[in-house]
Image (cartoon, one colour):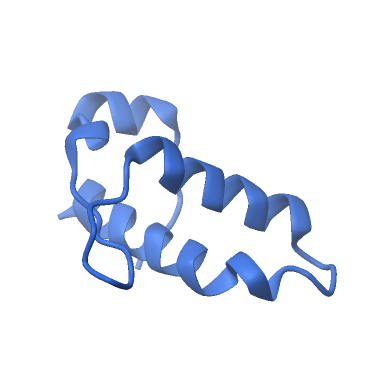
Length: 69
């Protein structure tokens, strides 16, 4: 899995229009997805990283698959 991408990749693929469902099946807005990822990256290496890690990893895997398929 290639999990390296940048903001240009998002623009090319129109990632902001890609649906991602939360754990209860609701559509998660792209802004919320970015907030979760940025919270995780900010807290990475601290005892609080676990709060966002699972969802951040799911988002990265989801975005990577969509960008590189």
